[in-house]
Length: 236
Image (cartoon, rainbow, N blue to C red):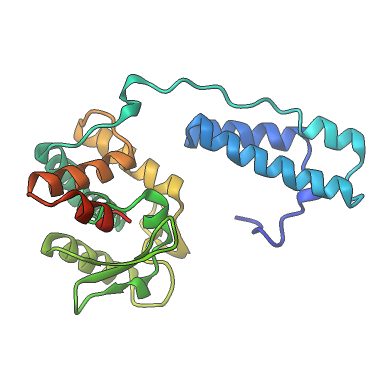
């Protein structure tokens, strides 16, 4: 939190920093995603070297950090969550006396009821939600704009969260510190992942990923009789 993309002194990255980044990525992302991020940082270092901002020896050492190895578990193919599992997850959110409880209930709802990807959830702004019309405007992975209707349960969860968050413009979902303080800064996709993993462990639910919520959304639509084209449109 001490710098951002613009103020980060990229040319000062050295091997120890790259190794620390690799360790953090291993803990928070799948191997494929982590390696893509490492590749991106190597590309930044390459530009810094070409501009003469980092000498050859430091550059060569920094980019030598090893790729992340990882085998996907059998569950990587994904699964849908049962109604009982979703109820258990919502229960532990409701039992949390801090603002993280309502926030995580919204995260769960946005995955199961709106079918959003974790990065899409993290990027939502308060301006994307129309409480009067119960509608969420979302930009999809392919830069398409969708207007998604929000059902009553998720709307109620959003109302509970917004009472704690406040009406100031900015990210819809915010960082909640351990003491329960709501920060005026948005969450990341990794935060979504960790929040759901935490609630799953608390509820005794079999491990699942944020994308499994999206699978649940699609399965529920198909079970309700929706045709494939409608499901594809709602999922962006």
